[in-house]
Image (cartoon, rainbow, N blue to C red; front, side, top):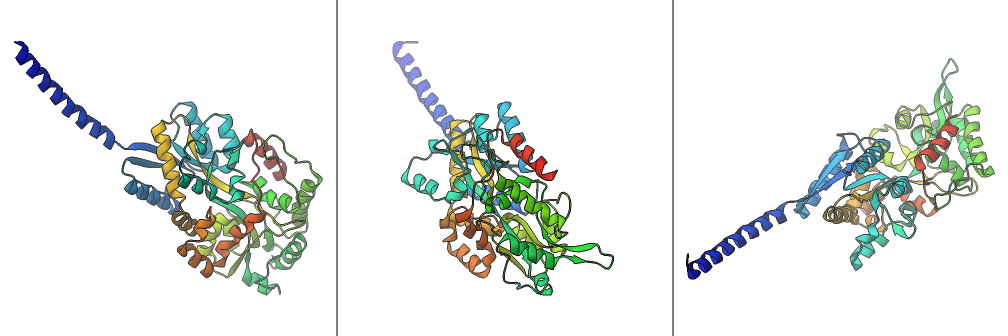
Length: 406
């Protein structure tokens, strides 16, 4: 082959290679970034359908990302699965886990702060838009580790029909501990054999005993842990007094004895086995759909103050995922927490919309004006406190839970 032919052959080879490489590059660019997303609910059900709808909506707007929701069971199941996957080197890219898991995830070096991705003025405005009460369990050490998503407070529900029967004003909720005890005594009903058929008040003590207990310790002016998550105050006399009040409700025969199940408390309310219950605002849509009577929703009765712990889940981004996956997860979290979607999520589930901007949307304004009960949890936020969260959180809360149940 002479020099001229060699140069022509080489030029042709380079041109063909460039076409091939360009096509390969286009193919690579079209390969979606895979974002595995752990969500704490069993497979199926209306919430799973809503999450699937959000994932589909985001992928339609962002065709270069594939979001795969994985329904991981309870919150407790989800944190175990997420940390096990992290330790094996195959964590989810993002996950909704309890806001109180923040210290555990930091200690395991499992997550990255959202501050790494907040770069534009729009990003900064988005991050500043969440309710401060929810950020208490989302930030530490000057960094933001979690983004509020399905957040809640504990609220009080009461059966207005039973209030009328007991001679109580159905539109006036007990405002303090003394009123709660008095109302519960009047609401407690017994059958002909003397067995209680309707309890005056029911506060669950399984599932999340420490959280429901915080409705009493908070309203008695006690905070269970410091902000750094390094010390607890379970032996504070105000904490002891709060527990004594709970125990005394049972001793007075107006609250069920023993451990009260978290999961069956809404059902007990539907079946008129309990006239007043304390549970998450996340049960609001469930109660609205299933209560065959007029009910009220109110703030937790105060003693020395008003208040409730916040609760629920945050989004986290896992450290061992790739930079492209982390960036895609950030965009997904930002997308799903936009005001219109946060408003829709609140209406679909009963969880508190996580920003004032969500409550300013026409859709949630209209819903709130027609169903004022949906605004109670939001209105309680100015007096809300952080949910109990510490380093070594699972062990610390188990110690308190076991003590409360005993």
